Length: 601
Image 1 (cartoon, one colour):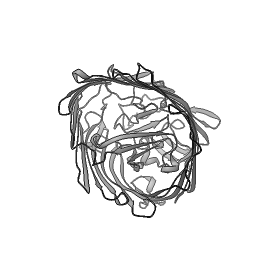
Image 2 (cartoon, rainbow, N blue to C red):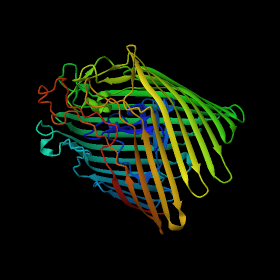
Image 3 (spheres, rainbow, N blue to C red):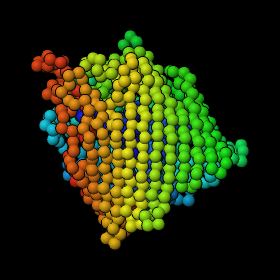
Image 4 (tube, helix red, strand yellow):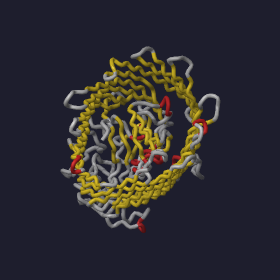
């Protein structure tokens, strides 16, 4: 429900997905937990699932490049999931719901606070095992899933200089999608098509305040992502390990200065059974080892009572691609406490890994071709933001937030689906790409408790290649979100109405493709009513996708021939099996019924 942030499904079979910010693809969005780069690379397409809601304090969204502080991958934006402190989390929390299509989700969390040691434990379990096929293509509309996630965070309290925290998370998931008669015995064969993914994931993250003369903080994380997956007859056995450490300190060299300095080191090891890590003579595997040390400095200078200038610079050395500089400059001017103008410009970069980020490289029957040695992508961004707040006597509170953004990309790595219908060709863009647009958000808080949050984004995302202007796929030129909440206090009821609107977006079609090149205008509406009882017990009832919109096109091309055994039969254009055409979930209305109970300390 964040304006300009759009979850995108990239496969109609296994429902791999990512998060787009201002029209840019998912790998441009960096996902962190407590500021640590946890979800990236191999975990991008499946690692976002299973974070227990009971441990989440809040989620921060930063639009635009954030590479100066966070390094690689923070090109389009940053999503930071901040977990609760064991000291302030509820003693016990449970939230469970089921839907009319057979989904079951349970979140449980409990905490224990002590004088020196406190802990928070959270767990999530999700299960769906129904076969749904409302578009009658003999393929599952939603993959069957069985997932469990366990999280444990410890806080050690002492003097501030010696306080620390450490957290662990483990995720296991078994999901599959495919032809309705698929069974595990068909895994990897060409008898019945299925996409089956087993995921095992372990995460460690922590923070330690070091007892030094000046305050120094050590942040560290380590994760292992092991994926055993089969896409039809294509087998991907992949393992990625990422270690990260960062030292930061704050200094006050002047009365009106706040200087942040840091040094970071990131190590990534990746291995799989594809050509991505094969030895030159194909005699064995050569796992990828990438070292990424970096240093950064950021200085916030208060020029006067109304103006603040922030300047930052980061230097990274990638063991494969060499030196990379990313500067940042921001200016804030406060006309008053209710009227603030911000100007920001900066640079971002990203090193792409096709096989770990692009599901289309593995699904279907297309051959993957890498045309050259891929260089890091670079971006330059400018952003103007204006915030205005009003306090009408009888209306409560009104806030306006408006932005203009412009991002210029070089060396962008994009898949070419159109040159050859049997291939996906990857290469650095011979030209440039642009993401530009405007967003506006309105926040109304009325004295009677009614709250309305509404936002809209207009954007133009395209690339210039060989003198031709080509639109970005899955980037609606107009989109919007809204949330309406109204409480009836005397009855203990809260009514919620949420939704999102999407304009026509360009889709991955082939030459002479029978499917439309653009999606229609569509909106997804959701309603929910929550009843609060005594002792912090809540029961909620809702309907997702109230008006039942879903794509009714032939979203899976040639679903009747998933192994391309009959490409030459009544197929004049040589089309092959292709499940990448998607713009909305293939799900009708779903009734949601849940219960939530919180035991405070």
